[in-house]
Length: 82
Image 1: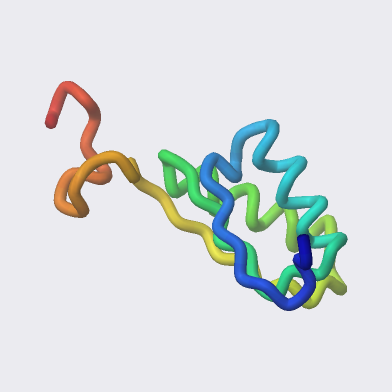
Image 2 (image 1 turned 30 degrees about the vertical axis):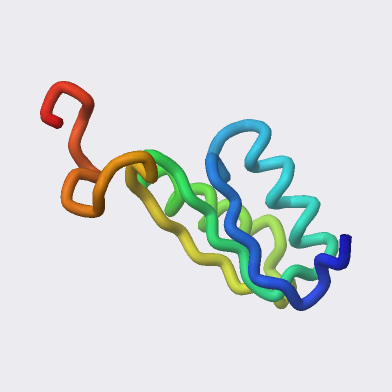
């Protein structure tokens, strides 16, 4: 698969497997990684770590958070709140 110059969404990107995938995608020169996690703070933290780890990478890093399995209005609510 051709990765270079592609925008890629990584669901669960802040998890252990997702982190490994993101690192490989940076090495493959993706143009943008959208790192999605249930908790935005986790995605933000990992994006910061990647920026420190790959200071010269040309890959744009974006973090997103929320539950993708519910409507937009509910994406930051817990199961109990829904």
